[in-house]
Image (cartoon, rainbow, N blue to C red; front, side, top):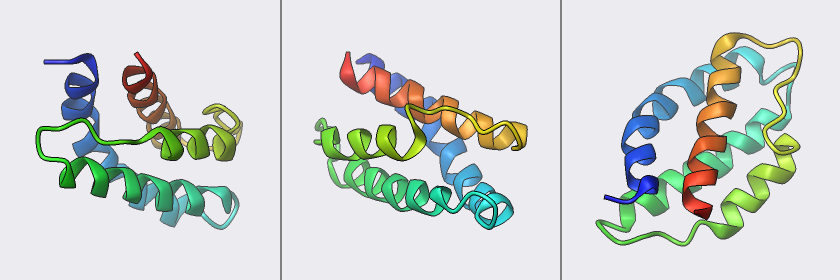
Length: 97
């Protein structure tokens, strides 16, 4: 199993749970997170639609890096927000390897 698949299996269920919550809690003060949610949803759809194949996620991860300033965690957010950025960064890194 590739590193990407291992990280995907570990992080995707948590991300599916956390991303909507973080958007609801922090979306007002961090409107960029709405864009993070939209890109995450696209990533999830591509992963789920790829079956066992490797999905093409280059554009989505590039967009996430731009939106999040390379996954820089804002100072005024909760641990769950930070966890989402860390899991997305880990998924991105595993995809690039």
